[in-house]
Image (tube, one colour):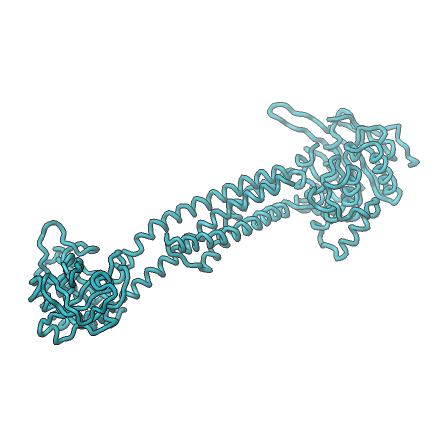
Length: 392
Length: 228
């Protein structure tokens, strides 16, 4: 009695481990995908970002080449010549700029933009007012501060109407930016100050060249076409010969997806490996344990045959037993897998989502494993000679 | 109803051939109680396995009720065993973790049709061997004698033509041995054909006819008791 229970237990355990890995892999993949799509949707599936330089991911210049590519006239050209554009904004930004309020001091990133930038980036104010067209026309010294800057300089105080000094130039705080959190690259989006782009150029930093052009498209279905139109226009304007690389980089929603999923990808690959190997091991365990079982149950096979069992009856009997054990192991494994995914989610190691797809995949893999790895021992049982089995 | 013609069985291992049965020709009629006697290793189990269609001879013919069984395929032979034979073995071969009742039901699983009154029939069969109080006991919870009686009930359940028993009392004490042999005698009186294989003279004496197996051949024994 004991040895048979042990055999059943080991087989179930093997399957359970394999199925648990498979389940976790599916739940983590699903969860990660949804998390990424969430980020993409929050940032805007219609958003294109153009940066100078050829490094697609960081927009940093490659080598030591001076970054001189994007200018404000490029923005006008895009608006004029490219279809499917909803809005375009030039951006000039620089990091590590000193900002003071009273005796408080912080280093933050300054963005020079135009009013439509708030819609494009879905990043407006939750108190006060945003930059206006007039502010841009007059290069007014007004700004909006992000939540982190507010915390660093004002603590509990109300910043609206107060004067801050950006690089010793006084600016009036016109509003507070809404809270945004961490970006896909891990940067604090609330650690910034927005000012009119004209003020940026005239009063602060005098850069002629843009650090970004941000664009929203009308029809996201045509976004790939639009990307190519913008690319062609800029290449022409920058006089880039065919065959030469772009002197700018475009970041599309697809790039965001690729970037954000890179981290989870290694985890998923790990799980694919573990799931594949453990299912294979489970199968091998099934075969071996069943062979032992067939061996131990020779007498049973013999007596069944003596009383009229055909070879096919024995085959089906052992296949069914294998199948049942496999399914039970699969159910256990699925529960463990779901539990594991939820744990990973809670510990913030990886996003995961409980899906029925995992259950379906578990049932399918159990069935296949039972069929593939149980067949050989079942055939051995069926071909067992009754005479040998019933020998004294 | 069982007729063999020149049954031979040879085992070949490497270059060594062992001729266990060297031309057995016999016939057993319905209702007879036959004992096949011989010392260990003479091939009496081999002969019983062949008679019960569990094994095939190297050459020779076996007829059951006029049917040449070696014209049948493996599945047909299995069906034949289910209908015609009830086996009883020295080691009982019950399913240990199964109740006496479920053990007795085993032959029905492989019958053409699982009878609607299967459980009733099984209870009756167990009652006929004196185990009506033990039907829910696991086989492992029964004594040797009781286990062998369950095996007999199982062998009887499908109402077979022949009971084939190989050393049925080999693993039993003398009291259980007597019980079992009494049951066999009763079954014979009720009209069943009994074939018992044994090395034990005391067991063989219960039979009506004794066939002695020696050097691969049988001969009718003069010690038989046809009055039984």
